[in-house]
Length: 68
Image 1 (cartoon, rainbow, N blue to C red):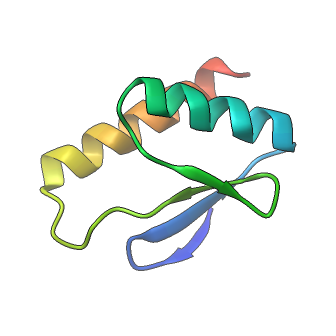
Image 2 (image 1 turned 90 degrees about the horizontal axis):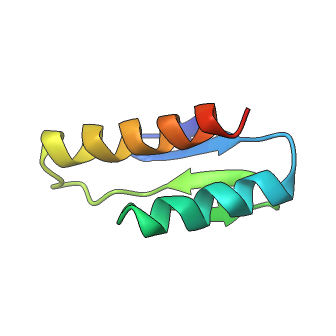
Image 3 (image 1 turned 180 degrees about the vertical axis):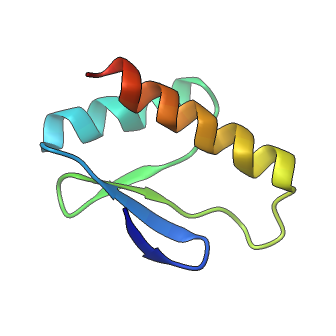
């Protein structure tokens, strides 16, 4: 994991896995994108409610765990 403030990137093993997680997150209404080929980037608004932030994080963590 890397980042500053609420802008964080999760470095994955390969680009295909990052792209799959990004698409799956979008299907679950969580917006992330892929940068540098294999980095899933989170960029929530600074005024995001904590419940929404943690819900999105849990969704992405679940997707990463499911990809193993």
